[in-house]
Structures are given as C-alpha cells and as structure tokens.
Image (tube, rainbow, N blue to C red; front, side):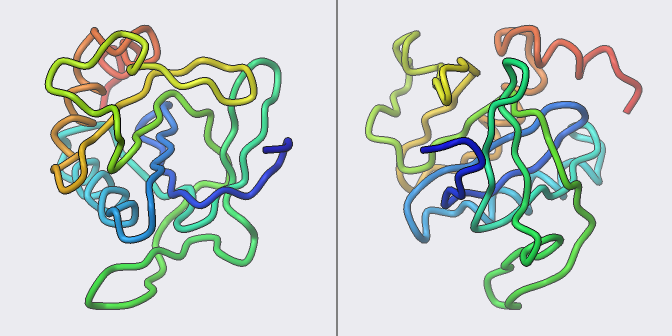
Length: 160
C-alpha cells in the first residue's frame, strides 16, 4: 500500500474517531457503516457520518492515519435492498479504530496483539470480528468503554 492508496473498505467518523471497516466482499462493511450512522442518530454513540463506502483513500500524515473518500464516491453508500443512496458525509477522518470483518483471528477473548493494527507504521486499536457475527455491539462497546484506549476516552468527555 502506498500513501493515498485506494483500499476496498468503508469508513465513518463517530465524534472525533474515524473507523475503518475492512473485510471481504459481502462481509457487511456497508451495513456496519450504516448501522453506526443510525446509532449516532439515536444517541447511542456520538454523531456519526459517512467518510466513504466501498473504496477509501488512506494516507499517513503527521503520524496519524487519514481516510478520505474518492471524489466520485463522496456521500454514496450501498443499502442492500435499496441500492446506492446519498447521505451526509465528511471528506476526511483521522482513524482511531479498524474493524476487520470475517477476521481469521477473531476470538471470544482475543490475544492483545490481535487488538491493534499497524497501517503505514501507525498502530491503532483493532476489532477482529468473526464471519457472520454482529459487529455493531463490539464497535459500540469499544467506543463507549475506556478499554479502547485514549482515542475513545475523548468520546466519553464530549457532549453528544
């Protein structure tokens, strides 16, 4: 992967935390992105907006991992059963969490090394999710508990 590389993924921004959602085709990346946006609307998590769906541009800037949507996909998300829909979006997010759907190393009690991802030499928290599992409760728990690290502690301090 090179700086500014396009990757097959979706991303949202919950409060100040960008969430990169990776996984194979049909693993539920778009569904999880939409579910997180709904959770943000109902106040379960901070307000959440789409960064991008299907393709994300990743780069490292000043020691942070940045996600952007490709221009041609800005504000577009696939909703199974409805097709491609337009929604509110942000053009840039600092990633603070990676969610890997259908992860081979997903476990009930994951090893500590499974809970971080290194992208462009930058370590960020990671959630490995087993194939077919509902990822939403895991992501919400990571966002709302202090076990996720300092990036998530900021969410708890905000007025959302």
